[in-house]
Structure formats: structure tokens, C-alpha cells
Length: 140
Image (cartoon, rainbow, N blue to C red; front, side, top):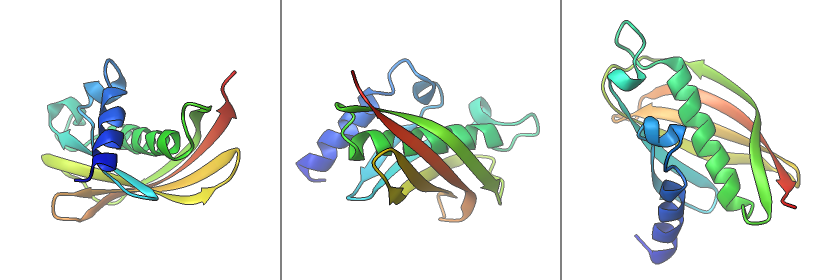
């Protein structure tokens, strides 16, 4: 991994300390020019009562990776980013292993951004697909 990627991923993972992302064990693992990837283990911490990945945990993963991507691609030192809308379609269940969320920018406006987040299992099967709208506002 090159130094730039390593530096960005280190910043992303450090920002998770003492947050929901740490509770859910979300780890940022890859970044490129227009995407960010995170992984989350599927275990009892994120299960529904019947032992499958909870849709709310999937949405939390999607919003986390999308919002963090906005932060790094929009210069989080100058703006703060908030998710303002998220929609999710869950297409497959998973009981164990890891899931991976890849946030890719669809629209990068000055104020609002649109992200597509695909959540897949270790074999690459689509688990959920999400659309996240973020807003960036200047820091004062």
C-alpha cells in the first residue's frame, strides 16, 4: 500500500475511536480517488434475534463509510459533513464472516453529495445497496 493510502486509512480508523464505528468494529481498509471501503464483522453484536445481520447495522455501516468518504474527499478541515438522507435495500442475509461496504461518489456538488454504497459478503455477493445524501457546510 502506498504512503498516501496508508495515511488516509490511518486517519479514518483513528476517527472511529469511542464512536459507533468502534462499537460495530468497522475498519476502513481501502481508499481510491473516488471510493472508500470499510469492513464490519458479522457476529452477535450486529445480529437480529434470529441470527442474521440486522438491517440497521448495515445502514450504520453504509452511513459511516459514506460520511467518512465525504469528509476525506471534501477536505474535512474546511467543512463538516452530515448525512441528510439514506435509503437502503437489503437483498440477501448473512449470518457470519465479514461484510464490506464500498462508497462511491455519484454526485459531488458544492453543498450536497450523493453516494452509492454497496455492501457485499466475503464472496462478493450483494447484501445491501444504499444511497446516501450528505451535506457539507463551512466550519466557522
